[in-house]
Image 1 (spheres, rainbow over the protein chains, first blue to last red):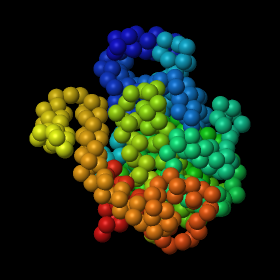
Image 2: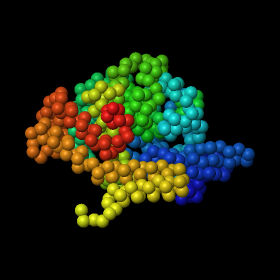
Image 3: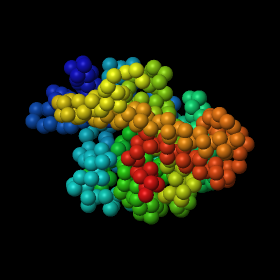
Image 4: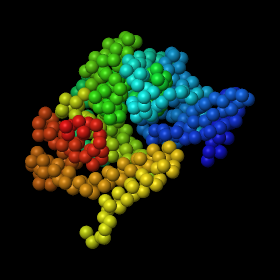
Length: 327
Length: 120
């Protein structure tokens, strides 16, 4: 399988005028939905490192095509937000399938390593501000160029999540409560913009000087941008570092300082809290979607089966936020 | 139970031990990551066998009082909330929702940070 992949990669890279021998093609620990491979290309005297990100061709209901992720990253690159440079894009009907190749970015994406390895300890105090800045930059991308993304208002999204949840016929009293609660909230009157949709540790590359690159754009859409701020505050993305509200490494104040240093819309903490509940509900529904893919037989995957039992993490987080004064 | 020892929990523990001591160190990193997931799943099954009935019964007893039904279900509670046939500000309702979320996570992931925080 690796050999076939290697040939397909070689052919694709030739189209982009990158010639050389492919070495050390290895799968990386990626998300539950994509294959990620790292490899090197040896030209006469130089070795360059690349990443292949490959979709299965079957996206979840909230995800975009992998090849569209590449187009999007190219747009984001234009405004100098930190994203890896795309070198080649392949569509589903090509040999390489729905995928793209990007330059490898030095650093770490595995959350627990970023949070615990000594190498990143000087970067962590800077990271919340940097994330705020980067999120604000993403939100400045010109949306008229992004025809492959859907535009959704907060209520569109909420109703979409709720009907997805309902379709699985596994009633959750807490999710029913959350839906009613969210329907009553003010989400902030702010211009629709590009939303990354999954901005958190795991989807950013961190070096010892901080944020290097934003990856994994599969949940991108156009909508209320504040959800990116609420999302990274969700407890699911603190990786056990409960007291550090932003991604397990930072404080909300620093995230907002970074965001407000670029954004024209001044964001306050209450709005972020509302979006945090929204994000937690959204993650719960995404867990249901992943588990359903296993349960309905479309894939047999231990990760997807296991994720069905993570829905309860989002339920206890919501119970804590709504009833017990959790942050 | 008519079955001999080892019982189901003993068997699950034997699998976990085997994966942890004999397999994890022998496979490449991306598979070792999956084996950690497998171990987590085995532990969920083990906790559900050991504590599942008790944790479910606790909720059902509280639910009987709340919705005055002798054989209440989680589905029925969800429907009452959905149709707003129950006061959403009711303290007993909110207490049950908290208790339900705690009892579920006690099986699914008792190391989850919010659960540990709420136990303190």
